[in-house]
Image 1 (cartoon, rainbow, N blue to C red):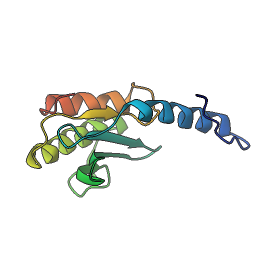
Image 2: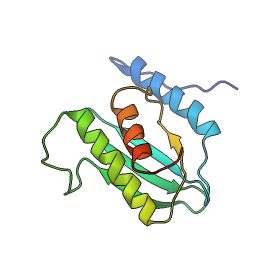
Image 3: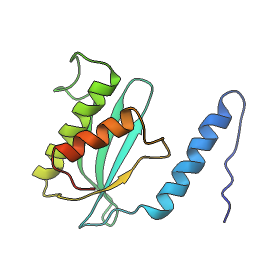
Length: 127
C-alpha cells in the first residue's frame, strides 16, 4: 500500500519524507491501556513528549521544554531533551504506567530523540 503525500515548494521534500516515515511508523505503533504510546514531537527549539492511551484517546502524562521546571535551565538542546525524558518518565510512573511503546513520529532515532528515550529508560520506563 503506497501513501501519497502532497509536496509543495522549498524544503517540502524534507517534510514530505518525514510525513511518510511518520505514517509508516504509526501503522505499527498503537498505544493500549496496558502499554500506552510515548509520542515525541520535535521542533527546532522545543521538545514535547506525551504518553497517550489510544484506546481511550487520553493523554496520561506529558512534559515539554516549556514546562516551568525545565524552562530557563542551562544546557544545550540535547541536555534539555534528557530533562524532558526523565520528567515524562516520572509523571508516567506517577500515573501508573510502567511500560510504553515509543513513537518517534518519523524523526531519526539519533540526537535529541535518542537522548530523550535514553533518559526515559534510565528514569524507569520500560520500552
